[in-house]
Image (cartoon, rainbow, N blue to C red; front, side, top):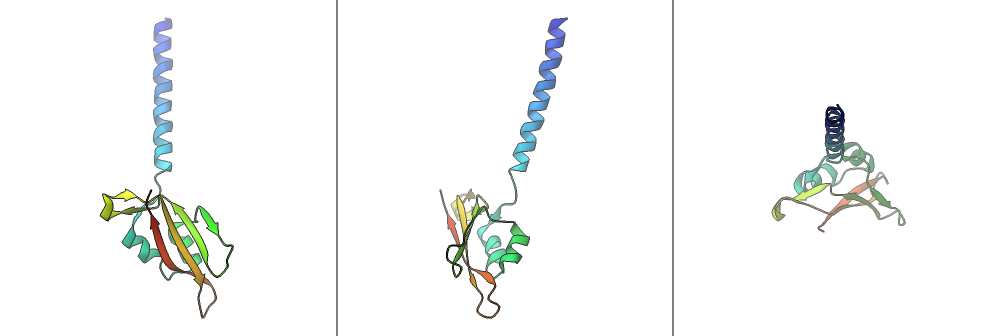
Amino acid sequence: MFARLDKKVFLRNLGTALLTAATLAMAGCGDVYVHEEFDKMTLNKSDVEVTNMIGRPTAVDANNPKHVIWTYYAKTVDTDNQNKRDTKTLLILEPDATTHNLKVVKVEYQKG
């Protein structure tokens, strides 16, 4: 009797563990972009447009309001480097000359 009960408990726990692992793996996937696609989605776009398109950055360095840096981790892949994920992608935002709103003026891809 205990052998059957132990087997049922084991299988239930195994199923729960596998379902949990699959859920966590899918939650961590998120959107990943190739460089060309990411450039099109961000360059010359406002901070609001970028946030709406790809989400909020992981980190923001706004110490210099005329040169704000947004950091995204593992958000882009380099097709010229065997589709390896970049460690970091930095967006450099500066105020637009006419609207004075922040817009992306440069994208930097950092490999790990």
